[in-house]
Image 1: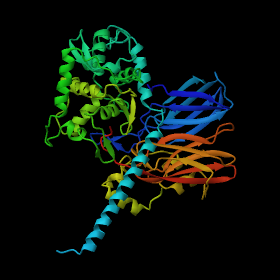
Image 2: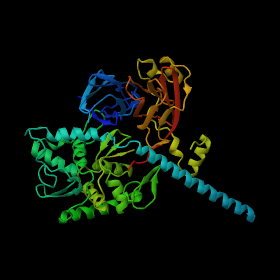
Image 3: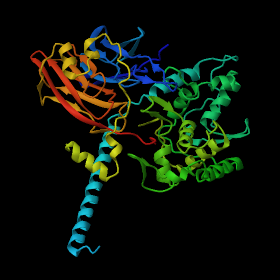
Image 4: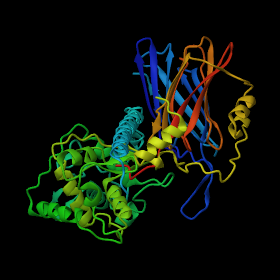
Length: 103
Length: 271
Length: 154
């Protein structure tokens, strides 16, 4: 099972600043292990974020986003206490969503 | 061969210019690397280990179905704030000087009843093979952020561990006749672009010790001090350093004592 | 400071840092990953952009692209892009020397800043392109990031 994301979402002036750390191996499929066998590709391909149900970001990723990915963005129209939800989907078909209250 | 004086002077001036250019390039390289490090800001993936460790700490597990909130890291049962800043130290119950990792092993085995081998099956994590030890270490270490390193150093066994660590630091061995001190005993040494801290001075020891354990970018993993020391031994081509051995704890004691007074900023982030 | 490549290497040679630009071997061209999305399978920037319906983006100063001149480790290179071009819909990140150039794309609904910060893998010293899609067309800027080969890492 995948680990929870660390999401920080805080009101900064008229905007909400979001910073996310995700726990993911982001295997490229081009790396060999100690025994010389190719480590199969396994990476996040899609990330979406919504604030109280309204889409605020959508991203498509390839294997060259770093392991344990970091993502930061900003949007208008969010207030303290609103729910920010982030979802990722990977090449294995796994998906994970985490939600925080904007602080 | 008799070189005319003018030519010799020209050569001399030329090499001085070359040296000046080299120094300048070196400064700008170090500045650029500092900029790279700054861009990571406070967003350290080590936080992912901290939260996993926090969950593990509070979860009832093992044959005894206990959590770790009764674990005594030296400041009393369940006290984690500031505990890492005073380790390694002597523990009466185990009759040993322990570092954080070996103390965590004691807590897991005694409180939860999980066998040592099972808990240490994955000492050092690798992608989807996750280490509970690394997660718990990250959680405890983060609770000492901002605390000054201050070891008790009262018990004779603590002083003996320091003395052993000090001796081990300078003990030359292996096919390259290397010691820790070969790289870390003098100022201004470097491997490729990495500047090596002089671990025998307070400044050098603090710079290094206050940021370990750390998230290693090259591995995408959080690494403990035990890992750091094992990898130093590997790089020196020495026999593998045994986890929790007297030498491992002695070296940690030596580094921690040299770094005393430094403010902990671990888990750090390293290349 | 932008140094011409040869002069840069010479200087590195003088300071004994020639290892600086040696490829880190993070992404050896061993296997072709089977990503079915054409842009992510592309091996050249023009091909990746073509797959996304973009041809010949215009170079623009209105894209602020922050990346380090030297990356101490290519496994994670912090990048930050902000577009002040009106009607910015998407920001794309492409790494010229990676086996597959396309790294990520970000779409901004109304109300979201045309801004993103993330970390990408850079296999060897390379130009990184930040491409911006707006209502008026496509624009880009680029930054050269040199990747160093490590010591033991502190």
